[in-house]
Amino acid sequence: MAVTPDKLTRIKNIVFDFGGVIINIDHHKVENAFKELGIHDFDRLFSQASQSELFQKLEVGLISEQEFRDDIRKLTGLKINDDRLDNTWNQIIGDYPPHRIEVLKQIKNNYKLFLLSNTNSIHFRHYISKFQYEFGFPFISLFDHTYWSFKIGKRKPDPDPYQFLLDQEKLNAEETLFIDDSIQNILAAQKLNILALHLDDHMDLGSLFIEGKLNYMVVNDLVE
Image (cartoon, rainbow, N blue to C red; front, side, top):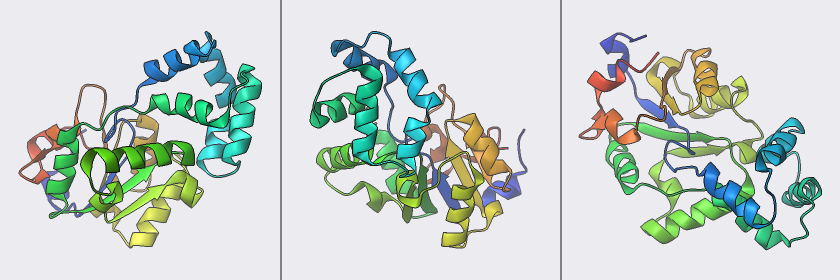
């Protein structure tokens, strides 16, 4: 459902998800990495870990990295050291398409930019250092402020992280656009009157902006 153009022109703040929006996520690569270790039923592993809320607990800091690693070893029966386990788990992290980084650099002059991501400290260390190595400057410098679930103890799609960001930055929800690739996170943002755009598999961040500003002709049909 499209919104009126005047609502889009009032946007002053843009909140980005990270995985699947800025950096690519590679589920096949991490599955293959576990297969190389002898885990051929990765779906079962992922399902069991999800059911036990293992990933969620790590993402909000309810368990330590070591507790997470130990639980993964219990689920898989693997007898591997921490570094190798971290490296295997980090295979889910894909590439940074350079044009997306250029988009963020261009629009920073026209909007306040924020990041709101469900993530964990193991992945965080990997992709932050990866970015520094590939682009030569700190990732967080692209934003006015970054909000990572494992640091703030809140994760999407719960309403708390959205409201926390709005309150911390003193933002007006109706002047704020949220971009995410998960529909459940979009629906949660909408409940707080945040304009939200679902970036599905057929869209790319680059198509949403032109000359450093929102491409209203494209965004108008996507924002609800």
